Length: 220
Image (tube, rainbow, N blue to C red; front, side, top):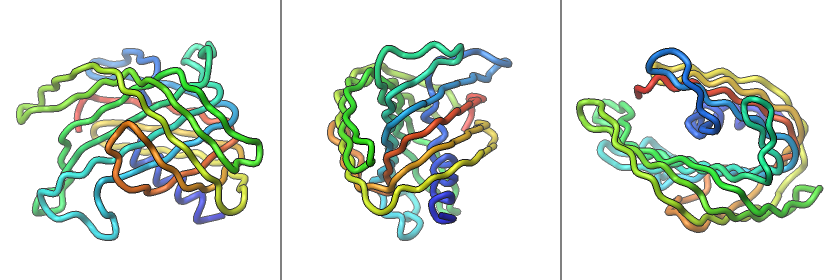
């Protein structure tokens, strides 16, 4: 149980950047994103780097996060018309001192077809993602492009169904992330098609309620 809660907290920290539904301008140079999941869904994280040790200096890594849920609500409580899939990818490297260096990121979402059983034993989903990809130059200036990307994924449950609840908060110079989760989940194996995601790091299926608020201050 403690191990499962720790996994949830680590995932919230590493993949906070996914939260990109219904942007709303807050203070200058800051953007606030809200979203809420209710019901059944599945998510997974992948990486092109082997995290058995810290990658060597200059090694370029791409981490991918995918999440699909039955019911998604916008900031004002309006329910989206169908299941939604979210995709977030971040590409980065490390310098000789072990410092994390941003290279680019991509994020997007789209209406999804989701099949999942009540015992959280199997799930499959597909969607066409409206994707934004951004890079930053040495002067800190962003450049972004838009595209569409067909993505599909599947999950197979393993182990016991676990009930969990908790709140997480992560803060850095570039973002503040607050998240709450209540419900049940089951660890899983997973695969993804349509993106070069690398190897699976973690995955699970869930039946839960969650609420997330992500504040981006436009710097990394």
